[in-house]
Length: 388
Ligand SMILES: *Cc1c(COP(=O)(O)O)cnc(C)c1O
Image 1 (cartoon, helix red, strand yellow):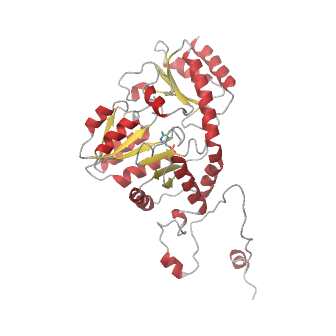
Image 2 (image 1 turned 135 degrees about the vertical axis):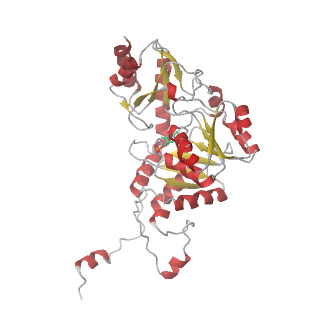
Image 3 (image 1 turned 135 degrees about the horizontal axis):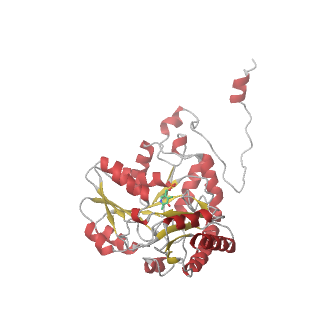
């Protein structure tokens, strides 16, 4: 009997020859994963990476990206989640219980603090903010209730570089788990695990993607038991990532070190030039002495992300600063960073916890991959038009 057309197409007998090899990993897409037989179903453990159980628990494409990010960070295990913020939320949810407290740096990525202020509070978890430059003050905040400390280097708007060794030592002395948001360092600027940090999170959305077109996050660990805990919560929450998004990041990863250096070099040239401009009172870039925590950056890093902020003099109006940003031709106005296109965005200093130390109007620049001279000329024309 000739099979019906649908069955013939679904159950088609052709199998391509094995052994296909190409520079890039294949895109394996699945919700359902097929088993050889019932015994194989019974034998399979979804936690075990030796096999496949269900699309949510991994495919050859997602396993490959996990392994590469784990290597990049210097860790052993990696979990992928749909965004950088989801990576932060996963760590919080996996490790905290009612009555616990977490500590966040005062310059923490804003949505992480919002999560603590709202949902974590609702689940009975309190949070406190600490000054990332003051390890002694931080140590004094730690208590029996402190179960997790978030670290971020550098702060992604005000750019302070924390005293990471000092903060980690204080947390470790009390056996408190530390988690680093390593989006700025991208696994290249410094080695979080060498500093004995327990969990390293990254918004793969930024440097690893490099395209401004993919959202993803990673949670990397060295410790087996800690990974197991995170993986269980990852499973309970149903967090998964799409194979096409994994492939986009796998494709961008080999150029990550080259791109990181290119963003860095252009950003430093522009930041140095902006420092000489009369409109600018201060440049906030960890590699510059004018940046709080510069000495901590210098002790740990030689590279930096292509990200910096400038403070425009208080004598200007916000409207002038907005006109400057609007007048930029090559810079897009938008959040995120590490894509090919340069971006600029004004931030309201009053809404940030900087204890009044920073004055003026802050604009953050994320430097893309355009030629530095074109970017400099663009900033110059807009400075002249806005602040004349
Ligand atoms: C962008 C970013 C995140 C969040 O990443 P998304 O993928 O946009 O959710 C977290 N931390 C830092 C420092 C970031 O810059």
